View 1 (cartoon, rainbow, N blue to C red):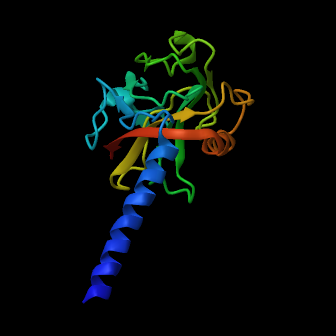
View 2 (cartoon, one colour; view 1 turned 30 degrees about the vertical axis):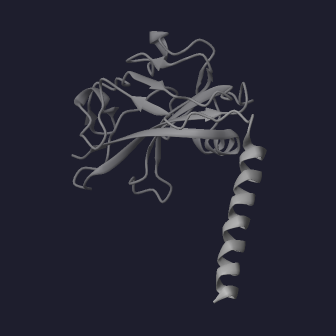
Length: 196
């Protein structure tokens, strides 16, 4: 009986000791915000995209207007942001990239509606919009094959640990995605849907 009590006491003391050690080790280390959130007045989580966010071309007749986006709670160590819009349900074997923006300054907290139109000059200063899977630069809206069912459109903001990605506006979405994954410290997503 005494041995069992001694074992319990030893476990309790060991747990307390290691708890103190961990607490001391983490003291003075700044904690990153945990509530990194992406918001939009044009799109909503789990809801259908409007005609504004549908591509104009490839058999689709939308307005091809990128949505307004804003965010809060980015980690303090963020040095730049990147934005991607991806459809994992496209029948390609590798999904479909609809928008790729990088080198967004860390002080930026929003992107204007229609910033994905290159001639609008509404994208954050210094940011780069590279090629999508439409073969074009800038925003390319939803355009799933007719009758293919519901597709998901993942608008993802990535917080990065570098000031810039050393890539050109002619870089492929796959290459930009690779570099984003190498330097990402946090991300936040709104997933909308669309079918026709």
